Image (cartoon, rainbow, N blue to C red; front, side, top):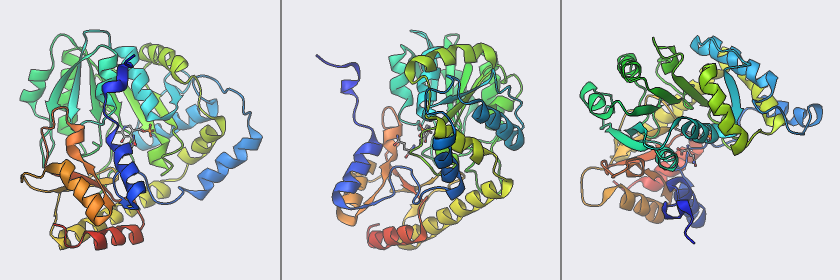
Length: 379
Ligand code: PMP
Ligand code: GLN
């Protein structure tokens, strides 16, 4: 008996974290921060274990959290969401993505995917019966281009999946890119599934612009967020979905048969956290930007070619077009130098780009310095 997903490779995150554990390597592969996240957010969740019911909460999420989500996005991104009808809590952005694709994609529908793409997208599209249409974004800018979009969109296009900021390339799409994409979505009557889990990690004075806010997109966007990224609590798996009511009706039906609900005390912790003042978000961004700069400067000093990182927890190094390739490079890096990283070809369906390696800088200075020490002599 051959299960449906049995032919898929193990996700590169698990493979590299497994190797890091086995070899005692410093793990700059899978994206998770050192540390425990904000004390007050954890304390709010701990208190809620005793003060809120531990039985099934409402399917759409605790009202306190849905209200906090709507208020948060109004304040930070100028979105006007009805917490009762347009906001839903999921068990991580991963569930939100699965639910959105299951709810929106019918067999034979075309789904536009931008490569590099987060590794969950393609298997979910295929399982829903969708036909992927790839747009390959190329280093170093990873920008959208009109000719490529014109080739990818057809009258069969149903959904486009946009990840902005983009993991793994750390790109933040320009407003011109977003406007171009919005125009295609409207022209071809497509729904945009916007994976915006990295929305608060945009550096250098830039700010995240949600695709949902562009003309024509309010009714055709499914916006997805993740508390794991906002609060450096990746194990919590609290996701949010925002969409106009006609879309949300389908999304909530998918959610009720995927996980149905999400642990109530963690929802309360996140509801508390989303109300934190602007200083928290500023300091978080500034802290991650400092870590980015530390790793980037250290790698540059060692002789690596470092690509710019405008957002996310990640930066990439360009290892050149030699015969080794990114996977072998990462194997050598973890086995011989004791530092785990992620080969970016894993984010391309056909491995179109093989010269980039992703490193996570969401670590303490001590961890970054220890990794740099181990990498000296490698390039
Ligand atoms: N989408 C992207 C682009 C991500 O990088 C991640 C996690 N790093 C997720 C989705 C999954 O988020 P969650 O942990 O909330 O399921
Ligand atoms: N999103 C994290 C990353 O890109 C890892 C998530 C996962 O392990 N699936 O590293």
